[in-house]
Length: 301
Ligand SMILES: [Zn+2]
Image (cartoon, rainbow, N blue to C red; front, side, top):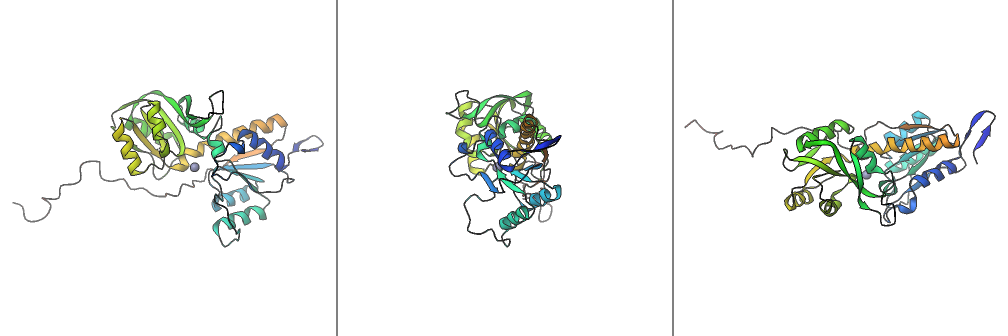
């Protein structure tokens, strides 16, 4: 139970905060292969400060320590496939040691946050100021049809594909990659499917939805090439981290609302550390056909 101290707000125990997070992102809705939930933490510990981030990497653990956080909530799991060691000689073990030494719990909301209402793709659509119409892949167990993977959206106004790429690059957090686009740069885009994280398994659903374009991350050559050969569908590829970071702000606001309801007085923070692994990008020469080198060597004729 929350501890009441005179006129000060009651300080919730970790178990109470985690119960609230499980209402927002029920762990039973995670994919079978996923590893969501609490990685470390004492259920009886008091929670005053919570940090949200995409990746449970050392920089983020250090940020949680600096901040004096009691709980770190990340989107990506620390251990997805199980482990037999948390020795600090491994990079993941070092994260665990940093957190436990400073009484910081780690909790993961991954595919259960992807399909939630609101979920990761709602936050992505919100960052782009899109009008959300419906889930791209509805969750059959939701009679309201609001939960599911990805979102089908309308743009605030029609844009050419090249313009939309610039718009998305300006609105999503800055990364070395920026935004890549596939398809006719002058094609007018009105409807857009979005999916935070790796979305190239969703091409069939995107085509079935009949949208003009699809914005996601981690698109590979063959699936992207095939998707654009099949149909006039345009693709926008952002950095994985950039498509999921907006969820951290949404999630912090959701926990703020819970904290206000209970009078917990929690302090929530969103990490602005860029944990996208790509750190530099060099643009090619302006896009043209491969250079014709036939006249660049030898004496002029
Ligand atoms: Zn992800």
